[in-house]
Length: 298
Ligand SMILES: [Ca+2]
Ligand SMILES: [Ca+2]
Ligand SMILES: [Ca+2]
Ligand SMILES: [Ca+2]
Image (cartoon, rainbow, N blue to C red; front, top):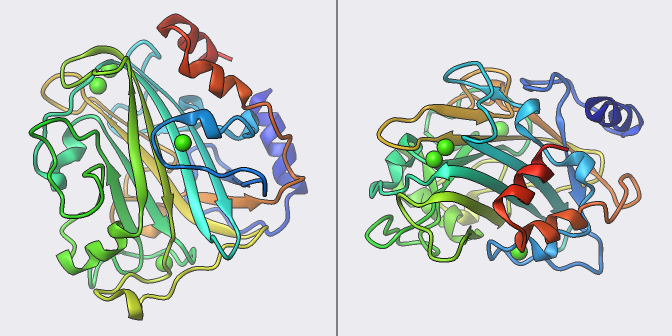
């Protein structure tokens, strides 16, 4: 039923592009931020109550790269909300709520965060497809968000929760510095090894057609209603030593290096979605673990 609703929305949406590689078979949607809403990337979903939950992406619309089987919600679960704002703001917003029975975040090397609990956010702004290489991170970019625990990530940009990888020229990290990003955690004080946690990965980011080593020579992509951009979320999950799952909006493994594997996000305008059904998201913040899982089970 849920899929049917989204498929119907797809049929009426303008600007459909050919599918690249979508786990759900037809692509995903980002909703225009209403003019009276301001989103702050602070890890709290208090500013996402306006979102239409029909367009939140759940694991049953994703692909597990490692096991090809969606893990039970008691192990890992998520709901990914994506939004956008036209110029002059011209940024992509995301709030990815994750529930996890065991938090594993003691990696200290930003290049290796994918080995444990970690979120990859991959952009192909101009929907061109093709390899990220030559040089790495130019045609498409893989950012990572990772909960920074004491003694963990220590990055020279932002607050240590976002990073451009993999093996890119360090000069390209200027693009990370343009991000606003933070990760909320519940219960408060949860850290590496904590059980039954909820994470809120939140970001606000400009996106670029090409990321060169200099911001001045990197054309910024202009977001417009009806447009389809390349965007893939990949959630890495590990509870102890090794990564056990990677849930992705892409239909196959490969979005970390080639935009041909990146999924499609079509930008819906105000009026093309039902505002306010996302108020449940606000309720989740203050509710119990059991209630959160019930929300995910809708
Ligand atoms: Ca927020
Ligand atoms: Ca888990
Ligand atoms: Ca591109
Ligand atoms: Ca975990």
